[in-house]
Amino acid sequence: MRELPLRVVITGASSGIGEAVAERFRRAGDRVLLTGRRAAAPVTVRAGERYLPGDLGDESFVARLVGEAANEFGEIDALVLCHGLQSEGSLTGMSVAEASRVIDANLLSVFSVVRSAVPLMSRERGSIVCVASRLGMVGMPGQVLYSAAKGGLIMFARAAAVELAPEGVRVNVVAPGLTMTPLIRDGFARHDDPEAYAAERAATIPLGRLAEPAEIAEPIYFLASPASSYVTGVVLPIDGGYTAA
Image (cartoon, rainbow, N blue to C red; front, side, top):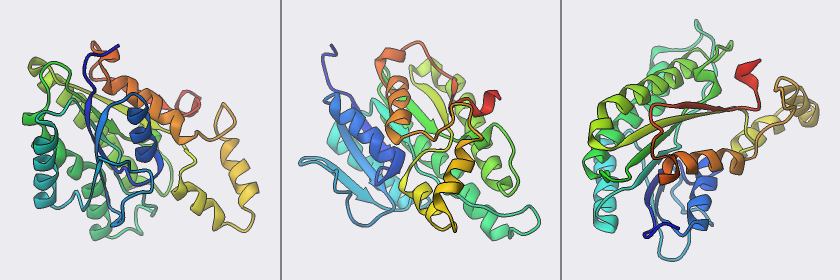
């Protein structure tokens, strides 16, 4: 059993995978500082926890977030970056402005948070986990910029792992497949036959079903915790076998 709880900052924590990650750390008795785009705090925020709403594309908010972590924790043991922006659009149909928005939300904002947080990361058990996507590893029509952003995130994390290793800070990536988050459920609901569409999507996955957020949170917790103390620079697909097929 660990002597001290982990001090954890989680982005994108207001719903979906980020919310499940927060719950996993809570179950272990760790301390969490949460942020997300939603103005109202999630109902899962516990007494004594902090939730800071804001835009991670805003450098002043990133500075505030890291400052709050410094005041709350002193050091950060684990930084879990679950935020991002899903966007669909053809190569020729997407504007440069929309492309910039996707790259900023999925890649540059991660760079901004990591750059600001690294001086605060523990040199004994510091761990950064970036949440990319299976689409950062394989191509799909209509996802050109999203795939580019998530692929860039994967390489950012691998290069950062090498650069930060001498400082004792580990960096790893998970690449989730389709997961039953509120965003995905809402997307399915917009189809004429949501159940048939969900079954069609599940059929593309070797395990034959979508993931639940808690199934993504568990490997993230492993990579963020001292249990993976000799693991850095890893890209872990959590996709039911999609990228193996």
